[in-house]
Amino acid sequence: MLAGQTILVTGATGAIGRAIGKSLAAEGARVAIHYGRNRDAAEALLAEIGGSGWCIAADLSDPAGPQALWDAAVAQAGRLTGLVNNAGIRSEVAVDAPMDDWQRVWNREMRVNFLSAVDLTKLAIGHFRQHGGGRIVNMASRAGQRGYASSAMAYGASKAALINLTKSVAQSHGHEGITAVALAPGWVRTEMADAYVARHGEAAVLSGIPIARMAAPAEIGEITAFAFRPSQASLNGAVLDVNGGSYLR
Image (cartoon, rainbow, N blue to C red; front, side):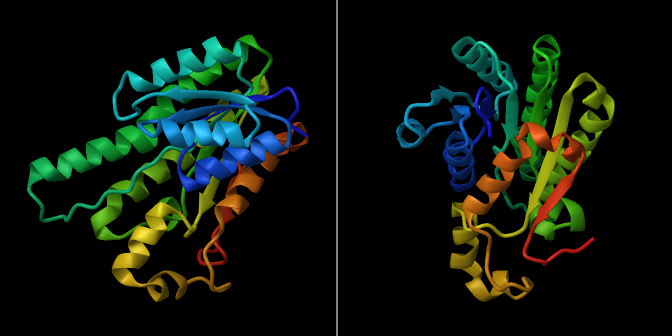
């Protein structure tokens, strides 16, 4: 379904990023695998997808990181047809924390979760204009739709901004063949979820999910690959909820 496509996936060494990379490759795409520090995990994913892509390091907490990543990906691939803004962190800071701590957490969260995606989106649009179009899939969150816990408001706000970015690209650039889709998962069985369960217990996670289970990373990977199918251009601007019925709109 995705033969001939080359797609850059940020944060590709986490559970969701790995699943996305595998699903894209399984449908015929080549994958530019971004990683921050874990080169071994990136190379393991590349081996798992049969070498159909490249591993590229970049620090997305550095304002220079997105440009360096994009340039390296284009140098390797020649042409990119898609971008998955999947890289993300979730930090906590109390509202009564010292202002320096508060600003440090918010600045880093917005830089990694949102502003790096903004920069990569700008670069992608310019590239796609030169090569007949392309598609962007942004990994948002249920937290960006319904609000989030006080200690992690930065995470929710960054994901809400990502949803708005998706809609803006869809409205402004769809006529150029440049489309954008957002996924908004609820709880997914990832390292981040496991850390939360270790602190609060699994019941705290499952109590609000009607199907009584977290999503598997593979579910997110499959939906992402589906969103890149050429036949799905009309998904442009959509926010796809993947939350087990825990948030309905």
